[in-house]
Length: 112
Image 1 (cartoon, rainbow, N blue to C red):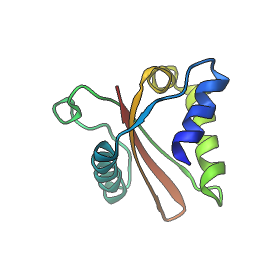
Image 2: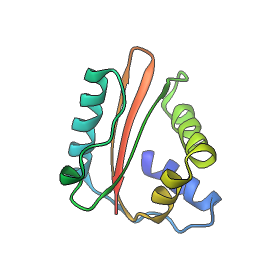
Image 3: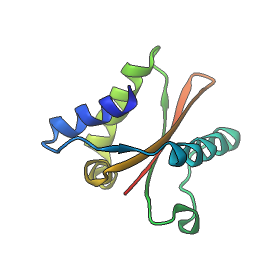
Image 4: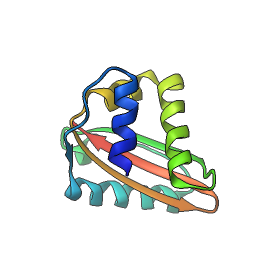
């Protein structure tokens, strides 16, 4: 479902669908998301851990269901963070990690 929401966002912005969801990269993104939950705040991984991947991180109020929350995240990303929007529109290989903790959704997306 996550990739379809990303591709919906890309289509709205006149981009072709992302082609590749990297399950191994998902594990790294999930580990980073867990670290953000444990720190109770968001941060980007040091460049030496990114291995050439671009990264987007966020923390948003959970809106009661996954789809609505991700759509809100993408809307915020598109309107407030042009550098992150560009990353999401340019990458073809995507990994992600998502956790909900104490009413907040934490997310890490990496890609190239």
